[in-house]
Length: 300
Image 1 (tube, one colour):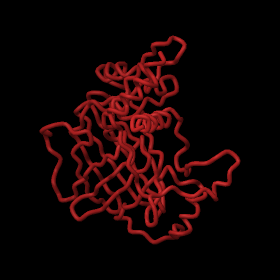
Image 2 (cartoon, rainbow, N blue to C red; image 1 turned 90 degrees about the vertical axis):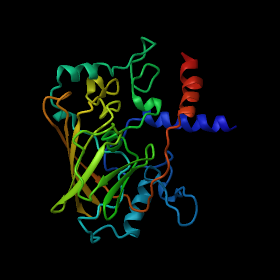
Image 3 (tube, rainbow, N blue to C red; image 1 turned 90 degrees about the horizontal axis):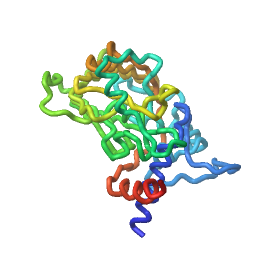
């Protein structure tokens, strides 16, 4: 029974991986065709517990906005705390800079293959190259682009950013330290330092593990069949600004001279999710292997 449950959970995870993500900023949640979602109870662990961002229906999201008095709520622009979004913030592929020859080589190596000529190659299938299908950490900024909700926690000497997908986190130090000129070892979530420039929280980072992807390739001709690589020389600068109690904006600048001929700048925004809390969403290698063995490779 335990194995059946595990396989079912992983099956659900892979199913969600294949479902196209919906438009940003639109509250999503469980629903049934023809059902009145306003009558759908939220799934929680009991009194005092809250539902997860992606489990909050549109009706419950609307009710939570009223309950927590979101409209016109006073806010401190230097306080980014809260649970934000449920669907990630994509990089802007219309602004992707040209790649270097080395960058093109890395990019071409991400091309998925397919054992069946009738099936379009896609990362996530048997011939996929996506590191996440092996339970590698998503890294950054992919945890921002592939997110089931994120949360900022503010502390005196640091800001901690949590992600539901994978239960990952990164620490952004605000105690005055500088980025290491020569990071002693790569990190999936980099070395991060932050400071305030007026009402904008500026985060600088380096030292990234180069096995991660920036994001899936989202240009139509290669959508989901390739990934966007980076090198260990990548540096990222983020400029976060809370423009209202329920809205946050970010500008992300990716500088990687080994892969891109110019910085890649993207802008995005996200919305506060009142009445929710992050849940646990781990990628478990043994479960993933069991699912691949029993549900994918056995049916080739």
